[in-house]
Each structure stands twice: as structure tokens, then as C-alpha cells.
Length: 327
Image (cartoon, helix red, strand yellow):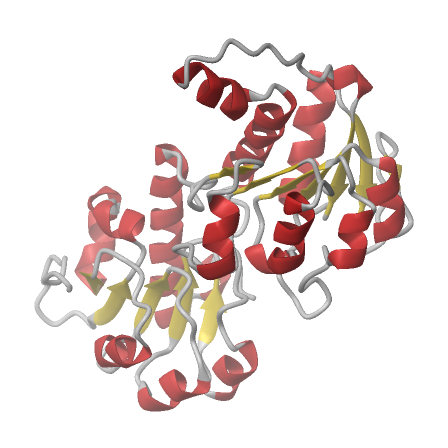
């Protein structure tokens, strides 16, 4: 399953063992500066470790981990006492039990802001794919059908941006320059004179033609798009590049199949790789799906790998001011 450690052994130096699970990060470890290899050995396994027993076996002798989206639970923390830092290859930490991490004195860091532009661009790409019927036209032509549905002009579309953090703001900025009218909703009250703000989820759903989701997954945002919400999105589009858990996928599938919501574009699902309801959504003809690749343009992936490694090593060396962002 794994590979040997990547290191440059220096006699007498304190060495830290760091597991690396994200496939992309494992493939890009060669882009790290040589200085990092003098103080750490990186153990790449080239892919997410879903089996908790295997993960425990890999982590027992590790000081840190550059983590994909594996679930980190109390059992893992209790059986891996050497573990001192989880360095996320990304921003979302919903798979990590943060209370148990704190209880076992495990720091959690993330590469905050590194992938914001890439994810925002992917979200806008999905929005345009919906409004320009890209996948439908492609499928029809491949079947020998010359069907010409008109595109939706951006100037006539209100794009609702739910979640106005780093990614949501960039989506709004990019889309407004293309010509979309922007309406924003965020749980945390904010002000931005460039855009109008909705006062509730219901209001933004009622006033938007397309809704794009940019909330982190928290107890407050789990299934924020529910059956009742979807009724307000009848004949409208929904885009999700944040987390699959923001949407009640069973209710969404029902809405798609009963002439409710007009279409869905998603880079994220409740199960990844997709299975069960998530798989049925991914293959649905009214859905445009991509396999959680929004942040994975090459330059962004290289920078995320570097920052995740620096975060892990800086934490282990107690140089906490050099960590990009702790949770």
C-alpha cells in the first residue's frame, strides 16, 4: 500500500516521521525544499486510507500526518500517542473530531487560502456549464442529435452566493465581472457595498436563478439545502463545490426526478468515491459532476503540498508562528 520514506538523512539531527496520504501530495513531494528532508522523513501511501485499522497501523510510529479526508476519531488518537499534528492538504476539517484532537494534544493545521482561487474558478466553470448547456449539447451531438437550446445570458441571471468567505468572495467577484447579478447570504453578518445581501436562506433561494454553495460543513450547515429549501429552487440551478453534506442528497435526487430543481453541478458528494445516493446523483442526466478536483490545478497542488509540509514540520519544531493556519 505504501512506499519507502523520502528523506535526506543528516547524522545527529532530530528526525520527525510524517505520513502523507493525499495521492496528489505524495506525487509532488519532490517539489519540497531539500531543507525539509533534513529534518523529516515523509512516508507517502499514494491515496486516502479509508480503513481506520490500516490508518492506525500507519500512524502508530508517526509524529505527524499530511491528511486527505480520512476520518480522525477518538480511537485513532488514543492508539497513536506519538501523533502531534494533523496537517490538512486543504481547508475542510469536518472529518476530524476536533474536540478529541484537542483532548489528546494533537494540533490541526490547514492550508488556508491556498486553493481559494482554484476552487472559485471551478465553481464558475460549473455555473457556465449549466447556463450554456455544455454537457447536454455534448451528449446530444455524440448521439447524432442536432438540438440547439439557447444559452442563458449572464446579464439576466441572479447568482446567489451562499457563504461569503475567501472562496465565496472570489466567486462573486469573478461572476460579477462576467455579467451576473450577485446576491449574497452568509451566516456571519458581513458588509460589502458592491453586493446586495439576503437576510435568510429562504430569501436567497427565492431571489436567485442559480445558487452556489461555499459554506464549510458544520453542525449549522449540515443539509442547509433540504427538501423545503429545494421547493424554493424549482426550475433553478444549484452548484456545490464545498461539501456534499451541505445538501440533503436524497431530497435533491427526488427533486431532480420530479421536475423540481432544473439541474445540479457538483464537485463534492456525501460519499467519495461516490456510492449509493451520491452515485445516483453523479450519473443523473440533469447533473454535471466532477470528482472533487476543484483545488487540483498543478500549481495549486504544489503550493498546498509545500504548505502542508511546512505546517507539519513547523508545528513539530514548536515554531507555531510559521504555521499557515491552525483550526
